[in-house]
Amino acid sequence: MQTREPVGGARPTSRDVARAAGVSQATVSLVLGGKWRGRVSERTAGLVREAARELGYRPNLAARNLRLGRTRTALLVVPALTNEFFARVYAGAAAVAAEHGFGVVVYPSPEGIGPARDPFASARAALDGVIASSMAAGALDAIRGADLPLVMLDSDPADPASAAQVNLDIADGMRQVTDHLLGLGHRRFVHLASAVPSWTFEVRARALAAALGAAPDAELRTVPAPLDVSGAREATERALTGAAPRPTALICDDDILAAGACKAVRRLGLRVPEDVSVTGFDDLALATALEPELTTVRLPAERVGEEGMSALLAVLRGESPAPGALPVTLIPRASTAPPGL
Image (cartoon, rainbow, N blue to C red; front, side):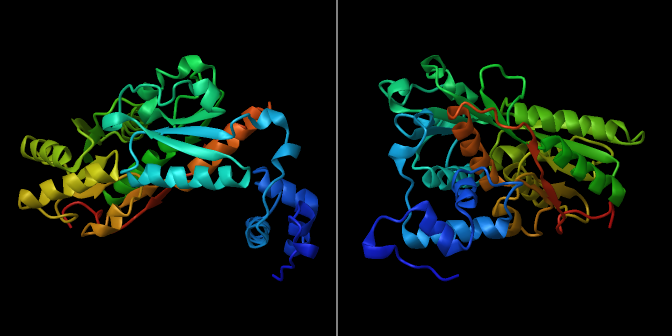
């Protein structure tokens, strides 16, 4: 792609971006307005964004619809940025925000979950809207009264407090896990369930119970565990030593729990997957750092952030974002095999 600087060093316009990318101004508007999916190809959208970056194009904020906001700042509330998944959610949200002249302020909930004070003297004066994970819902209590548009991520669609939701197809992810393990021949399962009270983990538990309930000879036991490696290891050791016959597969709500489960299996003198198969959820970098590498469900974290910011912008324009769940994908690796392999 060849680009050309605007004549006389003038500020580049959307017409300049369209010319550089070889597309129409309408296409530029769709891409930079975050409304291109389903209308413009991924390749074309990439060409437009690349041309905008090379030209140093910035939207004319004064010409934008004023309903897009006063402060052009969104608050992203997540459990903790030390969790890779939420760092990637932020990256996606920030990328879309930057294309629209918005900034994203990140507010991690103290200790990962639970209530927190309003991070601003007046949230209504400092922000145009809020994007929040259901895992940090308690942190929203102090700012719910600010009457700000709220977009919830991975949360109950029936929540009346949110203007929009961006959800993952978590239930389908758990169905993919169970189909994979049942297909390998497993029938005795332990669900290593996150002890964090959250809608997303409730969905996993319901989907798992429903999927295994349809297999008449399957046995399922649920063991709650703190969302950390050491707590998951201790919970797994109890689950494996207190059961006869021993379960052949551990289905974990999260890759961090799965890491703890793998440690427990080794400490008990067992092997993954020869004695016990282990699955995770999220597909963090940790999944391929484990040995053997972890079978897990890949969640498109950056896409969650992108769609969350796009939904907030739509709400600010007075539009209703289309509902729907983002697809997730099972990634089979070496931590699962037929029982007794």
